[in-house]
Length: 120
Length: 107
Image (tube, rainbow over all chains, first blue to last red; front, side, top):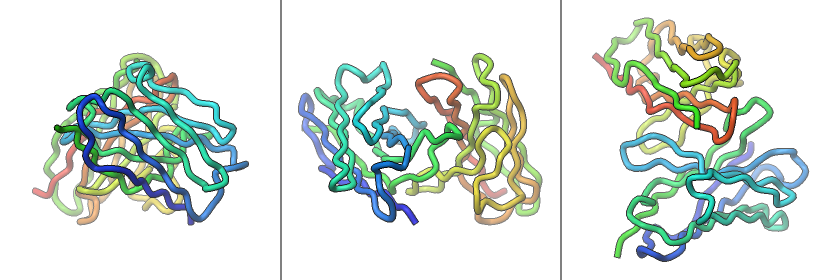
């Protein structure tokens, strides 16, 4: 079955750019008609949707983060990526990639998550 | 953004108990509500979408109901593996938003 796996640095310095990649296995990003999202969870807190990308590269971002986000997709590698610029300590969180929102308006497959700490 | 408020925030119950968690939306969201279960150190797992449709593979002791602004997640007979944190999520309008979570612990 399909699996998602996040990868990227676990420590980023303030003001730098956080870069994460989600690798998809057990299925193809291309042609499935799915959106692919990034969601984060601050320590001991709730969940925040960051944005999604479609396989044709179209995107939608959370307005609260829009000025700092870039998402991209590489269908040849079956991966999609997140870049978040000008990070601060407030960006310290577990970052998840997920399939969705689906036609049922939910996120049905998630990666295991990767902890990113912003600190000098 | 649509705000989701879950109650209670913390719930203590015993194996075999019937428990209900409520999710209230700041405005009407029709039936565009999903429920997730999250265990420590793990990603959320989709349980219910469309307010009441069980995701494939989810035990039938889980059920969801509601529409508009008030929704419930019910676990009919708690099993040891059900002790976790539960989140609701809406997608009536963007951005998708989540409730603050309900932590379910063993009494």
